[in-house]
Image 1: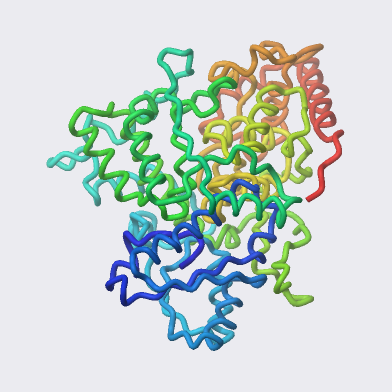
Image 2 (image 1 turned 90 degrees about the vertical axis):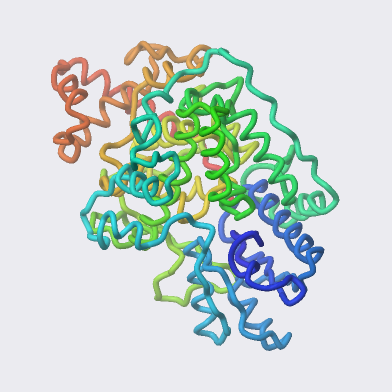
Length: 536
């Protein structure tokens, strides 16, 4: 069983009776030590792994649960002859890293039969049928793929092959700030049982130097609790998800977001089941169409689209754009890459806008004075999670405006978030969030000044900086950073059709105004870089 596919509801475990099935699960410390993964991420993954093993044993399967200091693949290479195991069948892992590890294991003698990953909703043919084979320099627009998948699946579609409600996307209806119009439901708490408490104690000891904390861990770790969480989400959160999905609050950091992405990415909840239920709710009038479509677009559209982009570009390694100087690669501690050979796990380093500054200490919880950043990072340190707009328009926005390294930001998201795996984090951060891919997945950089953050959140109300001032004492640096970002990247972005209006405004600014904006932006970047970076 791959560490990201804990399910018996689809795939090989549905092919034969449980009594005739043996399962091999490897718990690898080499993988967990590869990056300073958030402690809650490790608790979530390992506790679900151990509970899944017990659930399958209770179902009647024979389970071999193996602890190893080696990688998953190398552990199996040794285990197969030692235990006399026959050829193993494995659903194709979602993570590129695990696929590489298993491919090396096969070269080293592991007998393995890989079968398709049936947790996905689309195939490679769906993607290439819409866009053709990958070609360097080509841009991909998710909307085309999403429309194809709606038509293929029939989800929210009429018999006339037209979308329910007359349009495919209700995104323009889902951009309201939250002003306490309705009460935010209190999410259920899943108190750790004895097994999860054992995992927490283990993580605190074995991975004490890692990012984040295990304190207050309360996410589901059993299939029963994962299913219960989904029922709560469908009944209590989804009805109001749509209109407020882009809103940000310091007093309600979750709002109506489900936090289920980590469970979906582990295989505990299957996208096909969720979409079927959401579409049925919308059809019965139990769920507003805009909320249902917004959720479906995230799962059927964006999630599937991004994993195809990752595979088609080999994790962005095939991009034909300027590369940053490669950082020192991170190796598997149990099996370091041979000297002089490229590290297959080293991440791609596209940087279409030439961003290269090291990621500053604010991302590790050092207070910067920017209330939006400090609030969101504090949540990430504590939970290993924040919703998608805080990821995009606060964390990534600041990094893009300042010119911080897209690769370093990607690696930070990878270890800091409980739902981050290579196929989802690399495409979202190197693509949509930072425009490092040069427009493969986004038609423009997703950047803004203070006005957007002020409009969509309540962060600015208690901040020392004034969002309505661009320069001078007490001014919010986001606005100066925004205008100097556009100025700095005009050769690349000046002809972008979606940025024509801000560039018209930029070109009307006087020399004195631009000088003041540059000084404020430089001051902000220097301030962020002045703090000592924690070591992991």
